[in-house]
Length: 79
Image (cartoon, rainbow, N blue to C red; front, side):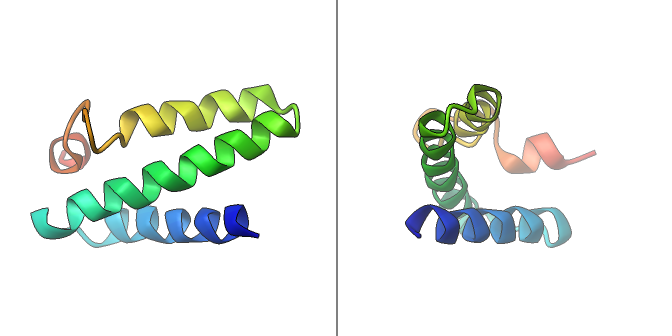
């Protein structure tokens, strides 16, 4: 149940980030939410032996990692 809730929160957060450019105040919160959701989904996929999905969500965890970010959302999504 927790995994399902985090999936929907992460999807909603990503859609909001794409449709509405978050300010710097919400960027860190968005990264934490997406990263936590991706961790839970990756663990769930690994337990279900869906290793390709688990690998994909691990990449999302790496990309949205708020502790050691690869790039900021503003830089990555700006055209």
